[in-house]
Amino acid sequence: MAYNLLNNKKGIIFGALDENSIAWQVALKAHEEGAKFVLTNSPVALRKGDIYKLAEICGNAQVIGADVTSIEDLTALFGSSMEVLGGKLDFILHSVGMSPNVRKGLDYMELDYDYFMKTIDISAMSLHKVLATAKKFDALNEWGSVVTLSYIASQRTYASYSDMAQAKAMLESIVRSFGYHYGRYNNVRVNSVSQSPTLTTAGTGVTGFNAFYSYAQCMSPLGNASSKECADYCVTLFSDLTRKVTMQNLFHDGGYSNMGISERLITDCFSCQGNCQE
Ligand SMILES: NC(=O)c1ccc[n+]([C@@H]2O[C@H](COP(=O)([O-])OP(=O)(O)OC[C@H]3O[C@@H](n4cnc5c(N)ncnc54)[C@H](O)[C@@H]3O)[C@@H](O)[C@H]2O)c1
Image (cartoon, rainbow, N blue to C red; front, side, top):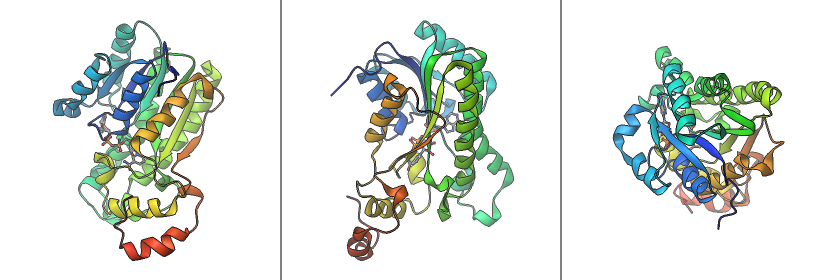
């Protein structure tokens, strides 16, 4: 059911790789709610091709490639997006993350520091670059909304999440710092959504992802939040109904973040051997 929450709103959506991507679901929902937007991803992701199917479903949205670590690419992206959409933007989804250390399965105590820098650049500093480029172009309307995706490993240790934990901590800090400055400048709001484990390319790339997923499922009174549910939440954050929400890390996790231990974990999960996926 659509509520026209994003009628006449324009934006840029970063990070739709395939239909499992959180950004993919956000794009579908934003389209359903009346938004017009540009889809962007890295040149490698564009070569995969799926994003063009999404663009077609979303009213032939324009697809513009950009490596989120490159100021040059971001400058071109913002310039072209404002041209294509015919003016300033109202929302940005930053749904981007990647760790070469995780990809290569390196032990946390023996990380490669060039990879570590890459993790930080792609998964955290890129949010600063996106916001700084938006500010340079004065690309966001007053009360514009920027949402990025985080994970609770920013605050607690999840052994195999590796250097992505540091990236998420930095990402959430940029949300607070840039949220202050952009708020003062033009009432733009900036928030992170700390999402449940979700079956996507980035998510399943983390060693032991099924255990993360099952454990969170057993702990959360409402169960894990799906990518579609995450999209619903993001759309409310882009809408005018959440104008005074900014500089927050917002948990979207079925209650997981406030749990200690659940009855379900005791009764079901210890006997399901971590295979519980409902
Ligand atoms: N899946 C989960 O369990 C989970 C949970 C909480 C938060 N998140 C976060 O959600 C966000 C989206 O991830 P997802 O789970 O939808 O997985 P995904 O793999 O579908 O999305 C990650 C995206 O980042 C893009 N990307 C990587 N490097 C890039 C670069 N240099 N330039 C531009 N784009 C680049 C990829 O192409 C991909 O589209 C990430 O920040 C992730 O950490 C995921």
